[in-house]
Image 1: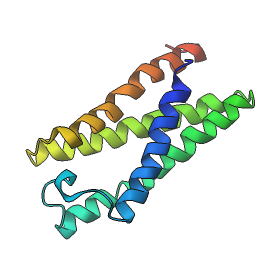
Image 2: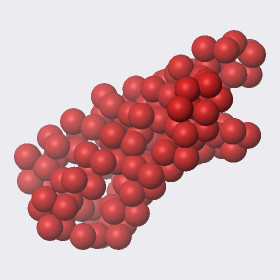
Image 3: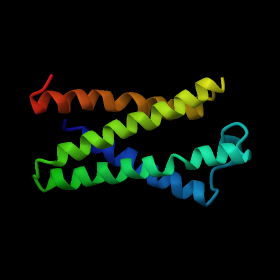
Length: 130
């Protein structure tokens, strides 16, 4: 569990940076996903803002509670991990349905889908449930 804070910092701060960069249109055009100018896809992308910010808030708050030695940090960590995996799954599902494979978009979303599973197992094991 000692590596979880590092993952949370990278992912949670990464989400905040991504949304700031997206809002300011700082991503170079060659790195944008296909059909980026399509208003429907722009709306689809922005639909992730709320879940991604909840991920960041719950993950960073869990780190604060952990550092303060407050046991409920694991509840917030659990929420953050589940939401992170769901966010990755939603994106990968979309790219699968649209048959659009771009490693620049698939890799980070597969990471978001998969990495939480390892830590979720540890949290569940530590909680005494199987």
